[in-house]
Image (cartoon, rainbow, N blue to C red):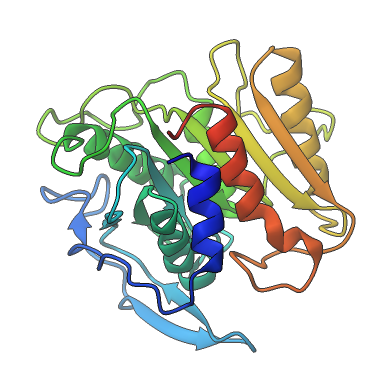
Length: 291
């Protein structure tokens, strides 16, 4: 069945539709987290915040990947990267809820719990980039086990997670750590990316250029971006990313909605921009990233 019909069916189902339970979290670095000899001084914690009671995760020392297998997998997989300014993780509305939606349209999801807050003496994204590259390699290494296709693995990131996804997407393929054949397989570049109000896209010194760690080239995989015009700090970054993809003749789709702000996640808004999951699903089908 085509994805669009699956999408329509999912929308018609009640909220109680059964979904496969997530698997046990997998430690990304079972033989030791790169550059970190001991955990953070403060323990990992989770708190519910705001009117929507968003699950906020803090002080991640042990990065993990939690797999959400689709009951009727179509072979495509997506690593979900929550946002939080590289200081916390907005783990529910930019994480678990998104994985459940992906499952509802046949996509296997992997929720990435990457290291936060920012590490002293390191660039804000350095430790998280190691984590997402390891997660991509791990997905490819275990593709048969998880019933996914190693050439249909994407990333989907929000805000800081969108920045993280941008770096993975535009990487030259060099891992930022010493690869381990037991856990790393194939390329660490995903096959596509979905960037939802991505942060930190622009060069701080020259806003007419992308950040130096984001390098669009003639080999950058396809990307889908969505942002609100009212997202005052980050809207221009999405537009610039699209322009660079266009100039490099790469496949890219950008939606800038007239209303809406930042941080609404999967569905925490009444504005029209809440339709972004439907648009992203249609784009994935049009790009033949799902069947």
